[in-house]
Image 1 (cartoon, rainbow, N blue to C red):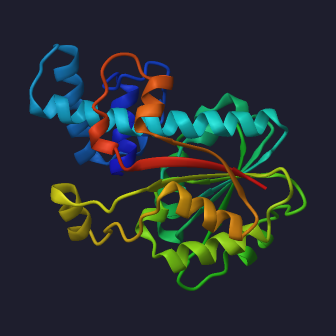
Image 2 (spheres, rainbow, N blue to C red):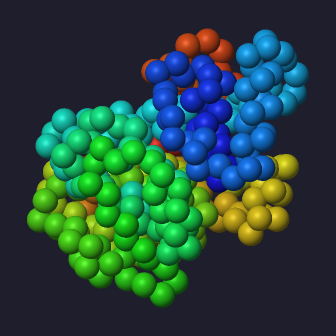
Length: 270
């Protein structure tokens, strides 16, 4: 819900990424988050400043930049005729509804059954998705990702664009590597893997909030370490970028990059 809220802030114009749009993000929000969004939008439209507006702009920037960078990699994969998209830990992602480039593609949304139940309740009131959406419920503590994808008719002989956004930092390294091995076994030559990761564990106030929510950062990587882990399962890391790079590419105006200085995205290929 918080991630959807940050995307909704960006769509409302709180970010410095003018081309980012997610008109569906606000439709996922419960009443509490909708009220919070409404208050910030009022302040933005009135030209008000202050700590709340400043914090909202930082949050919107971080999410819009991360999303824009991943979207660009997805568009590149589709341009190279990859028509299977697998979103690991899809949450309240709306790419299948907002990215016109996904027309004719099949998007497999992998997530916990409870999360998918919530999402499907929301999207029942959405327009038809641009892509063909297949929900793949997986409880990673008990279920096999490989078997779930097989049952969902993911074709391992065709190219796949794997999206792993906002997930791996919450996993142990062993759990992340185990998942990597499973998806590697279903990855054809020419496929793309997009991973959002962090080089530091979250500390300070935000780290405390994550711990109180029961979702602390558990694992960090350097770009070299992640490239080695990917190489071990047959992927070649080709691009690795951080927030400053994303801002140079997509933002207009000043972006407070310190807030997300440890966040990075790697694009790897098979």
